[in-house]
Length: 85
Image (spheres, rainbow, N blue to C red):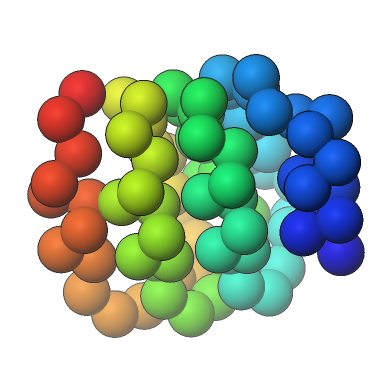
């Protein structure tokens, strides 16, 4: 589902993704890495579970990532430490 939306390039220039406090559930879709222009991702105050997608480390423009207050588990991916911005 996410692949289809993103692959149609409707969101290719998206820089800000704010979905905080929407009671979203499930895993954070790793396909978000396809939104390569993203600078800010705000997904806090939802009910996401599982791991932080290591693919987020491929978002070279990412400057701010908010995953506060949720049910994520596991380590912070080392790939995030490679981000330069």
